[in-house]
Length: 492
Ligand code: ADP
Image (cartoon, rainbow, N blue to C red; front, side, top):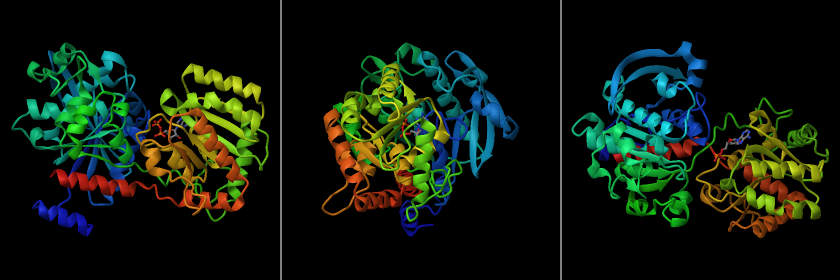
């Protein structure tokens, strides 16, 4: 164990690292719709290296049942009270890659989609929180810290401290990680009361109420022992009205317990030297393979096969968050003036998808898109592109820019949230930097930054330096895990 952790534990009269239970709506590779699943799937493995027994508890979704049913072990089952309902709770256990995962089984709530939307989703995850709290004292694992993630599990600390007073659930410490503050779990109070029997005295703006709704994320921010977000810049941003989605009051009040811990990526999965889906492998000392990947990408996507022209790429959900409106605003200007190629892999809002289809037909052989989700192609795009564009309106952490850098694709990002914390802009006087960035959410500022990058592309020395810096930046999860370990110990 690290000396620092030993001393921290000694101050708290302990010798053992805390036991941690990560509570989450999704967990990779079992169930995944976004970055949350990756974090919950990777963090326990990194914590294990630090001597922390971290386990996961997550719903036994249909997609998990379909794939892993023959590997799970049934532990026990009972019935939980969900308002007037008597709801079945099955506890199953699965060992995966050395991590113990507990699965809450209930066919009615988890037999279909991971997120059902609307009130059905509120009921799904109110049940999940109730079931986890009821399961806690009966686990074959003594939990010191419950690590809740996003609004789906954010109501747990409030329930523990108000409805389980004096019980072990009340004594456990709660960390709430905010992966995206845009989604808060807002429902009518009567609906929530009917499910969770919350006393009406808590329906005030000091606790649960926000803008006339019961707000799960807010309750989490009030009652959790500590709060963190997934980058230091986002932790600062969500205390301002521009980014807080209405929660700046409580987050400023809890400022002393609010920090930012940047996510990492799975450097084994994202490794251009070993990636099995690439037509050629490479590392920062031997970039020939990257040129092969570029040619393969151009060929596969119907772009002109030209090694001398830079490819600007995006792999993204096409939503307002990701800043695609900026791209739509200046793509014609760029394509008509510059010798460049642009490619996009993603799906999302129809207006953006249609824009891409139009641009593709206007600039055949120079612009292309793949509308849909394709992980293998994503790897080839990271490997084959020269620049990776991420002009986000807000970005809690962002994984794509880190993956791009690992594959030597130079990121061009807006300075917000995790993008600000992971991309150091190129400095032409010192040669430092691993990407390009611009400050304001402004299409013309983005265009000028792209043109600046284009200027650098034809200078071999500059590009070599940039690729070198990008590829050697450390994005392993081990650094994040150490920071989480400190947080867990602080809470003891
Ligand atoms: P998000 O806000 O969507 O979680 P991140 O940058 O944190 O954004 O993570 C997105 C992840 O999803 C990255 O690993 C990226 O490669 C992947 N991804 C996004 N869109 C697609 C797609 N259309 N096909 C394949 N992978 C995708």
